Length: 307
Image 1 (cartoon, rainbow, N blue to C red):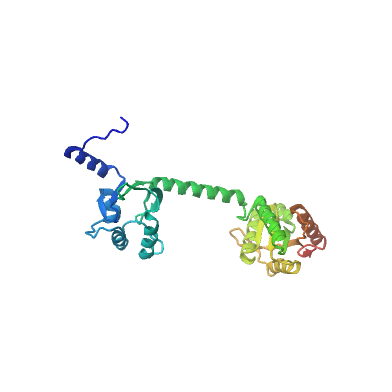
Image 2: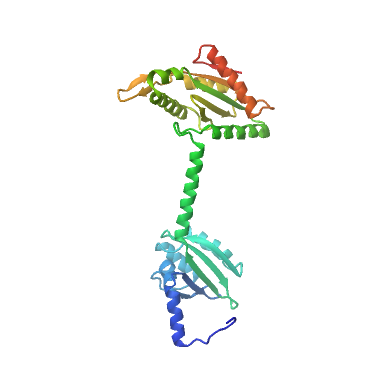
């Protein structure tokens, strides 16, 4: 019946209190001076513990922090946390928010200021939902990483390294910074596959990728564009510096270690390097780098051609 309010006798009050106690929600009632007037068992267990007073909101927070109860305070500064909380605690007649507790649980809290100025708080445990949310986020992140990663080498795959190139080309034009790219091709890779087999070829690709990760600056991006070809994106670099970076990568390049017999396989690579021009698109800069790469191969391989 809409608007119906029953008169409460002692028996009904007892049942109401039992219901609030067993609900699993954290329920409390603070008066207009922020003194705790009622707390069900869940709220007491989470926020109050064995505290014996005075039951003001700041005092309860301090006790909880000292005894491993209540909300998690990341910086450990309970005084600053209390000041921030009090400043916004009664700024709206009703508000909702989520909070994480010291014990690892999460609660969705509903604050309602009653007509007499008292504050009713009802908290619902959303820990399971937060765990599901975290699992979904982790699954999404893992799927995104997989979609961007070359399975064999662990480097960015063709799609992702080209996205990086597009991003850097846009930044280059907007900020007026310099940008270079290098196309790299492992020399005589087909002969390696034909002579030793594709497993050895895969070992060479993984070895080359690992050496590049170890030797190139974190600011430099490298990805596998397919087969034995790799693309390096060098931001904030002029043509001379980019060519030097590629040649330093080549210096004392270690051999790949093949099989249980630990056979050393020496191999080389060729590179074509070019600097971005103001009118460059992805296609135009890659075409120029590709021409430089083929020029390096025509020169006898194991070298770098810059253009």
